[in-house]
Image (cartoon, rainbow, N blue to C red; front, side, top):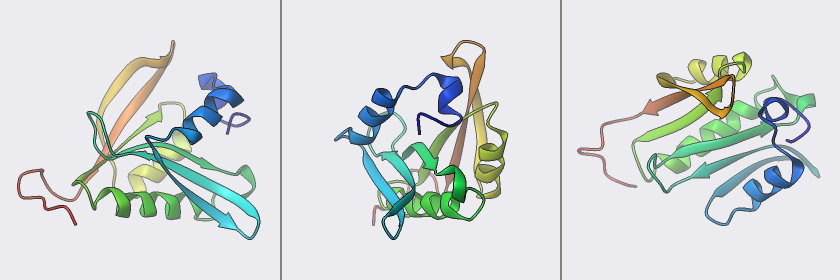
Length: 138
């Protein structure tokens, strides 16, 4: 994770990435292929945006092969058990990821100017299956 984009531009060190993956308040789903880990997704089911898909990482060698899509769909399945919305932020410069999220039905909520790093914006996206009113947890 710390050796590829967008984390290089965002200045995330190996230690910061490891702390994120090991955070006991988050859930981590992993895509494995035999003994190889092809990707992972970290979700947050607490906080202001219940159902926040916080981080997605896919090994560079398998990008474009559906691993990211499968991880997102698994995260959505988990999140939609608890709430009607999935939120995700994408760096404005990360056009490939943004294209994937939009293809999967995510819509722009707003722009967070200079949110993580000066000079780079984050785009907040949301996918919803219903309003909170009337939603029943599964």
